[in-house]
Length: 226
Ligand code: C5P
Image 1 (cartoon, rainbow, N blue to C red):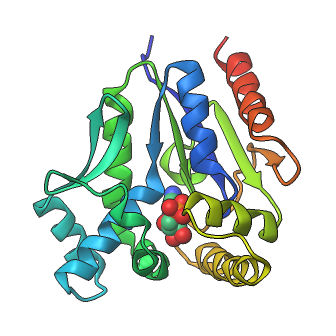
Image 2: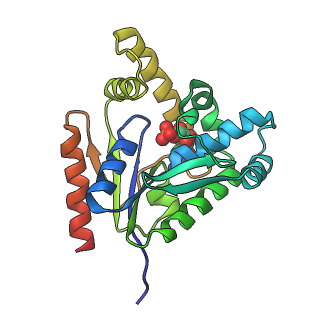
Image 3: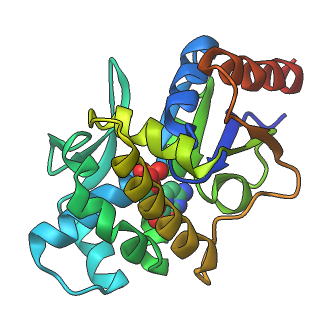
């Protein structure tokens, strides 16, 4: 019998609620949450701070030397750079503006995927992993695959709230444009583009309450892992 951890893959567009859903589902099931976007952001922050060129091999090597890793704490896994918790620092606008370019580099994607697969092995019970290519590339054998969608305006409102910013029509409009530009970049890149796995269950969260979307994923998991 092969003992592999139970894996729940949650993919979707920026601001669709992947990370908050993944965190809540993990808590309900006693699994660990792995936020792959936080790792792409950590590599981007390191590249910006290091002033290195936009070169995948260079940025991947920088990540190994610092190192960038997912550290297991009492609150779960969090991104660390050279031993420092960067989970807040990686949310900055400068990182967000550059992360699609950095995440398009194959060597960076290999580095992130290695970190994710190792972390999953560390947690024998199971992991909930959220991102853009989790069900298609990183864990194609995951028993539960979810693809979250929501309208651009709703995603913009959620992202503004998440970042502690004011939610007014102007901000919603410019935030929605930012999200859609990032989605377009992520969906059109040649390597591991943002696309739903053919066997993913699509959930439109535009009008769902948060508890409802969490419950839907938990129900899929209970069925799959029964
Ligand atoms: O989810 P989050 O907004 O933090 O992701 C930041 C960026 O990281 C995305 O816009 C995308 O460019 C990249 N990403 C990716 N593959 C993943 C997760 C994130 O390319 N699995």
